[in-house]
Image 1: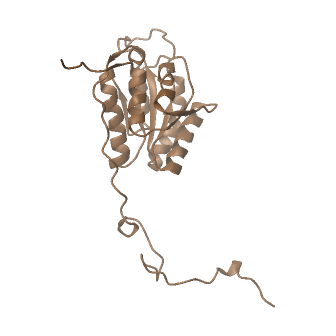
Image 2 (image 1 turned 180 degrees about the vertical axis):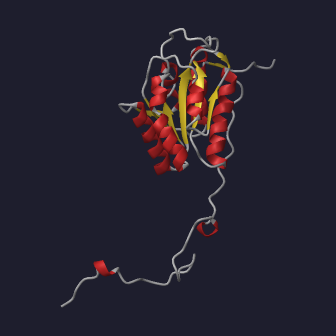
Image 3 (image 1 turned 30 degrees about the vertical axis):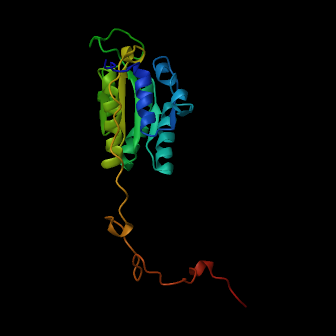
Length: 225
């Protein structure tokens, strides 16, 4: 008898997908709507760093990506918290930094008219679409793995730029079929410096050629009397 698909909450599904792509650190602030994500970080080996503000989380994740060479991950809660990180996302877009922002969103069946739900916004995805390479609102737990794989495919095979994934509140805590684990393709090895566009070499210096030691610049020379 064939076993059915594994059932996971949306919170565990997204943490599992991050861990499968090698994520070991995340930056963010726990809030009312994202606790189901935080619940699973430790079990999947992801350490968490909590700054004082979501903008700080975004810039910390950006810095982590620049220093380690691996994508930075930030977790926010809904509404104002997500908008707080938008400045860091915009900077990551400008500088081609692989930054993934994960946030909850309004429930799937939330009406389009305003109802006063906590941190309600007209559209979080539209707001982040203006500063990220893409903003993806999933509609099922089974779609989460594909959304994370899409982000890491962008980071590894295209021009690395920030991405946002939104998981509706009613998916975060309810177990549902999770679907197979999906992985982005591995990153291609970097091209040799001589073949990279935009790499310039000083006159009389070419790759692989060492003209020997140079005299120090004039301001560094010692005066001998």
